[in-house]
Length: 525
Image (tube, rainbow, N blue to C red; front, side, top):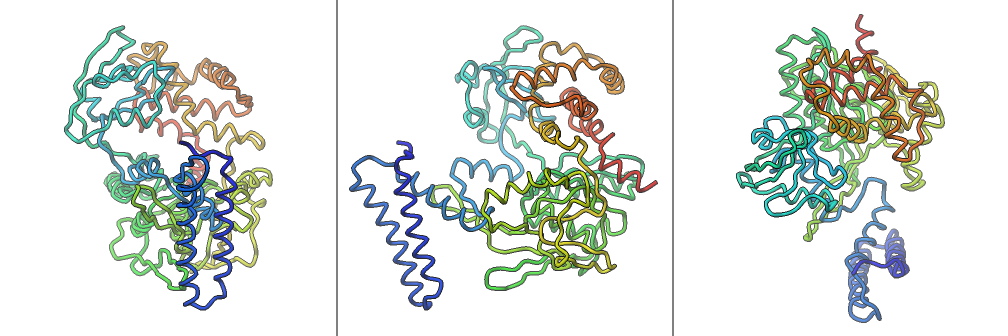
């Protein structure tokens, strides 16, 4: 039975009682505190037993416990969180960097599992599946006409490496049903989206998160770019919410000289752990630029802060999120976990970039809206910085703590003030779905076109911009797309390029007129 909101007073009472007990322990002698802690644990366990055994109605006490845990953690800080078993498996897989499956990008289009694009060199691509195919059956399990949730679909398509699955597919372009036998294999979940040349001497690497394989992916990309003779590197950390601190540290080590401080942490007992660079970084002398925005957080800020504080890199963009807390994941026997804040981290000059959270979680996350209202996303002068939080780098540059990394070179948001929602919308999956549906109507529209011919075709037409406007209106969103027409067209064209030609072509389009990238390239002229 699901937890009913009418039992909320029971939960609140339990949490309140626990809060009183914990509060009373603050000034108690150590021995008394230990006894009281044991008593409070016993009290909570007894309360759950009382509800299970004596309460007049049936209650799902697991729901009560989970809600109690959530309430306790919410009183600590915004980043200490409880992760239920169903979510924990998904999070762990994402951070691991791979999974066993058939290798397709898909989504539920109407009532069918539609393949947006098979993963390059993956099992499905090798078997002959194509973009636009609908998966009707996985083995004998019917997948169409059911509006299955994503986790159910994943469970049908995943399995043991080397295991075989038969898919029945409808290929719309041929109006045929086809059967494919596919052997499941390891499918990488990339954390480095692109490593490409922007010009003869400038490389670009985009990191979307810091997972177990990020340093390995980054190093491979950097090596390829160095073999092509780059002298400057742009690291794009925009919208990168963080991940494993160790991966960010390892990447920073590639740019810093021996014994330069990368980051240090302080725990509850006051102990400090310092992490220094080692000898032999592979890019210690070339120019480095780091792109950040208001959604760059945690490990992204560690890397940006290390390069800024050591006068090693130029930070370009807008003030980062401001997360300076370190979490450790602790597992429960039921497969759930708690991600608990165990330390604060500091950049090499000694600054904490954690923004305040004393007013509660709601106000903490609402601070992003305040940046829009204040005009901070459009003018560096609007960034609120406390003079008391000034720090100096070895070369005398002033840097600031107290709420994110402030860039050396400020670049405003490309969408007009008051029209920020358009910029954020373009980075969601909605553009990808729109493009898939347009291609699905007639995949021959772009058949046989070389990439440059495709670019000319897209540049000379407003047809997809107009269709996208209607598509957005049909979803119920009332956005002023005409004011950001160039930006919208760039994202639409880039997404067509991705689905028609591959991931790297997306970046070929999206970066060409990117404001931050242009700021870097213009500074080098």
